[in-house]
Length: 362
Ligand SMILES: NC(=O)c1ccc[n+]([C@@H]2O[C@H](COP(=O)([O-])OP(=O)(O)OC[C@H]3O[C@@H](n4cnc5c(N)ncnc54)[C@H](O)[C@@H]3O)[C@@H](O)[C@H]2O)c1
Image (cartoon, rainbow, N blue to C red; front, side):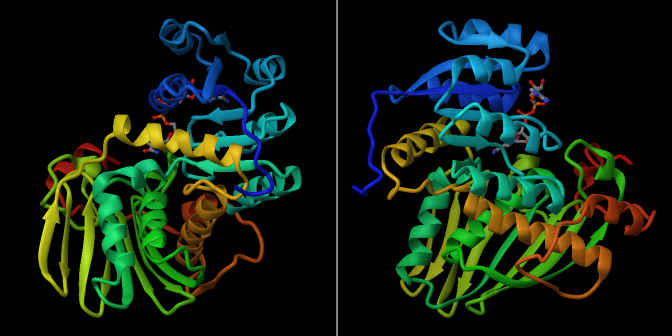
């Protein structure tokens, strides 16, 4: 235990945003005796009224700031669309919370992401970003194989997803960074196609692809969106993600919707696993209690780790806007989405999968 150890019976939590992910979070906190779900909020009254009966002990209010000021939570959690970030980080800090938990992506622009980083650092508050797929048994198995050395020295990591970037890319970058020991990236180069999702609330190019050079020489290769390759092992469209590592003696990879596969020095292996919120959320929130109890037990999905991935995603976009290799860490903030709106050609992105026409209509 570290010097910062301080164990209390339970930590008070406010959850803001009562959509799909807000309800997942509220359920996980309510189901863990280390937390007291003290408040829930959504600016959408209907969603709040629909959720409130599930959480009878929690105060409910449409004004997140007023609720947080009244409850004074230990954990301020928000699960809002990606265009609502910095103002709620500030509400959490000003409410006196010791830990702020929020959904990926960190932000849509590097200007906002950097402001969030500065606010969190200045306040000295702990922060966690929901890259919770890592708790899946298939993700943990691949990490275990890669870190055991069974595929030899890792030289490449890779991630592909059919879903578009503001939904999926930070997941791909975070788990591949995990497989690579969260080594920092030194430069990034990317390209983008398709404008349809640039005006979506999850604002993204329809297709982005690029390479990342990590400090330890490992190469990262990413493709996300309309033109990304199929993952035929997986049926569910949103779960067609292939996330893995190659080494001198083999490879190991996750298929988000359907297990894992590896070739190691010892042969060919595979096993089960499928992304499952009910499975992944309980350990994700338990690790928040562990970190609040003990400064020496940082959360595996800490903001610092998510921020590394956020910079990589921002740099991929910036490369598509400016051309060439983009050095990390980024020197200053920019509005990459506005840049992409100026730069990405009018041509529609080519789709890899016929079924993707359901999602990439424009
Ligand atoms: N980690 C994951 O596996 C995962 C999966 C799905 C979605 N997400 C992310 O979770 C976030 C939320 O997604 P969702 O599917 O739950 O969205 P959603 O649209 O279902 O819900 C969003 C909620 O936020 C509320 N809201 C919006 N603006 C608000 C504000 N200013 N103040 C208070 N409440 C506000 C809305 O009323 C709604 O209740 C997104 O960033 C998304 O990318 C993560």
